[in-house]
Length: 341
Image (cartoon, rainbow, N blue to C red):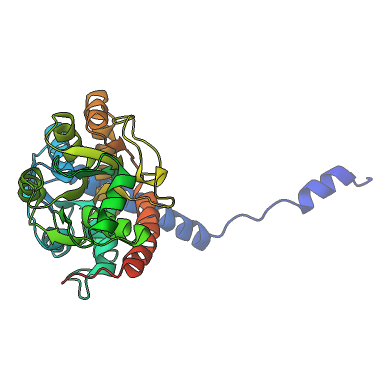
C-alpha cells in the first residue's frame, strides 16, 4: 500500500506526551502562583487593621496640613485617618518619626519638597535617608510660592524690590517656616540670581512668621500660595510675584518672578510616603485611595481656589520625580551657598 505523505508528516511532528514528572512540576508552579496571588490579595484585604496616622511635618494651617485634613475627611479605608502635626527642623522631626515607624502602612507622612528633596543637600547630617527610608505612594499637589512683602515696604513689583535691596544691602530680612523649606530656598535662589542680600529668619512654623511679616519685623516672605494668597487679597500683605514659570490660574494678575528675573523657578510639591518595606499590596491600596480622594470634584475645586494644582501619580512616578528633584535642588543649594545652622 502506498504511503500517504500527509499522514506521515502529521505523525512525525506530533509532540510527545509530557512525562508524569513534568506534569507534576507544572502543577506545583501553578499552585505556587495561585498561592502567592491569594496571599497578596489577603494582605490588601486585611489592611488596615487599626486607625492610620498621617504625620504633617509643619504646624496646622499650611498647605501640607490642608491636604492631610482633606484626605482624613474623605478617605474610606474602614478606619479613621488621624492627622498628627509634628513640626520642627525644616520638617525633619516629623519625617524622621515616620521613617522609624513600622513598615505596615498604618503610619504615613505628607512629604514636601523640603523633607524629601531639599534637606538632604542643606543639612550636613540628616536623621533619615530621603529615599531609602520611605515607600513612595503618590504625588498629590504642587503650588507656586508667592513673593509677598510688608505693606509699608516702598516697592510694588520685583524690579523695584531688587533696586531697593541693592540700594539698602542687608537692610531687609525674609522669613520662612523653617530651614530647608521651599519658602527658605526660594529666598536663597532669589538672592543668588539677583545679586542681592537679605537675612533669613527661620521660624517654627508659618503661623509665627506671618504676624511678624504683617507687623514689619520681617519685610519679605516667599510663602506657599495657599497660605499667602487669601491674606494678600484681604490687603494684609502685598503680593509681588509667583515663583513658578507660568502664572497660576488662582492668581492670573500676579506676575511671575521669572518675568523680571530670567531662569527663576521654584515649585513646591506635596506627596504621600510610608516607611520603607511596606508590602506592595498595601502601597497599591493606599495609592488607589489617594487617587480616589483627590479626584473628587469638590476636593479638586477646593485645591484650585487655594492655588494648589492636583498632581497625582503612581508610586514609581513619584520615585522618579523625587530623584530628579533631589538632583535639581542639590545644585540650587550648592550655588546659593545656603547651609542649615
